[in-house]
Length: 77
Image (cartoon, rainbow, N blue to C red):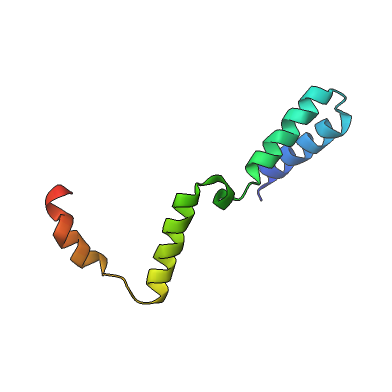
């Protein structure tokens, strides 16, 4: 972390420690919650299943090299 970032962080900490406005505190807490959400929890069940299938296929060597797939779809790329 560079000096400017550290200074900004310290400035924010000092500002937060003096905050009395409940609405700002609530907004900051919501922002923090959104920023720390695991992306896995934000995708659909269909997307999760698709990712899990891809991982399973890769684990079981059911994959094709990128070069062979590229040859098939090259005319559209």
